[in-house]
Length: 267
Image (cartoon, rainbow, N blue to C red; front, top):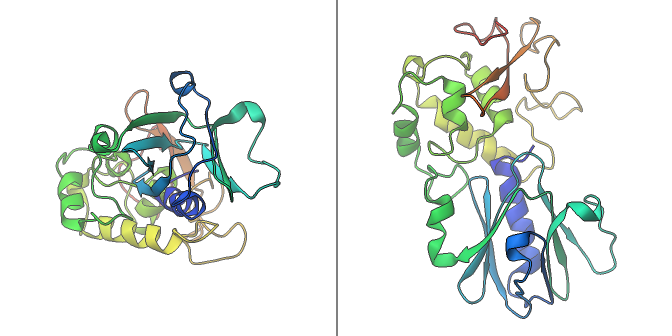
C-alpha cells in the first residue's frame, strides 16, 4: 500500500530516470489530458510531497499524480517488457532516450502550472520526509482537535503528510495507545510525530516496509494485516475494525491488551 515512504522512493526513481532529458514520448491516458503533448520538453525534477508526486516539466508545468490505494509508477529500460499491469490500466507514459516511466492505475492525474502547485498540495501539513518537516507544527496540528481519535488524526494529511493506514496501526501499537484514544489523552504526545518520522526515514530506501526490526518474511509488521492472529508481544488475538468518518473508513488493527482504552465497533 503506497504511503509516504513508497512515494519518496518512487519520486527518486522517476527523477533518476527522467530529469535532465527531453521527452521522446508523452502519452497521458485520461480524457482531460488526452490531447496534451509534452514531447520535446525536458523534465526538470520529480519531487514527493507527502503522498503526492510532482513531475516538473520545462515551461513551468507540473504533472501531479497520487497513487492512493494501488497506483504505481514503473521505470523500464528500452526493450524491457512492461509488467506493471495490463495495458488498459496504464494512465501515463513519459519516456526519453534511456527510460520509460509508466503510471498504472493512477486515480489522480492532473497537469497544472508549477506556480499553482499549492492548489493540490498547499493544504498538507509538514512532510515527514520533506525539507519542510517541523515536528512542533505537526504536533500543534495533531492536537488542534483534542477530541479526535489518534487513528483519524494520523491519517489526516493536513496534520502531517505521509502517514497511511499501515503506519497508523503500527504507530498506535508501538506507542501502546488505542487508535480510538482522543489525541488530548496521549501520554507524551510529542513522541507521536517523532516516531512517525523515524519509521518513514528508516523505511524510505527499503523495498519492504519493516516496523518490528525483524527482517524475516512475515515478521515485518506488528499488527497491520494480522487480524485474528496472536499479538507478537503478548499473544492476545489482534483485532480489526473500520475507523473514520462516514465515507472515509479504513481498517484499523490493534491489540486490545497492549493498547488498552477505547475500542472501535469490533471491541
